[in-house]
Image: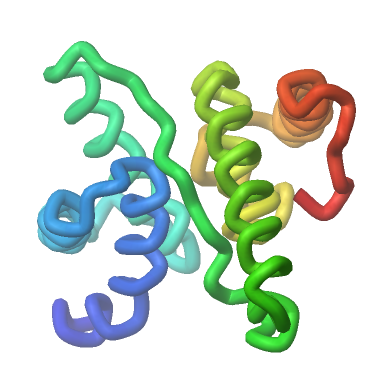
Length: 168
């Protein structure tokens, strides 16, 4: 696969994941390019069919390294832009305001969770990855992903004052 083909296939996915982690468009673009470049550097060591998991894991490592260098770990607000447009468009200004306030509360609550919880919530509930795909990205076993997600949802529920929609 050429660099153009790989970039075309996966750049949006990797960019979006990095943007969720970094909340910096320029940095997410730079790290997306760096991730693609690293793929070609290590292409021979990557299992066939595991390219996207490898790309996500590499992107995650780049983001974490960035925060370690800055000695700063923070969570980035996200919006799942893949939701059907009908569901995401408020019909009145009042509904829009309520939606914005709920999103702020959710972002704030998630930002207070520990990093492992943030990771599993982004990958499973925002990126909608399967358990196996999440295992591949995080390097965890299936039990750890399930348990961490369960604990993350409980911690998020606690942060939100007991109000948690199961479709987080």
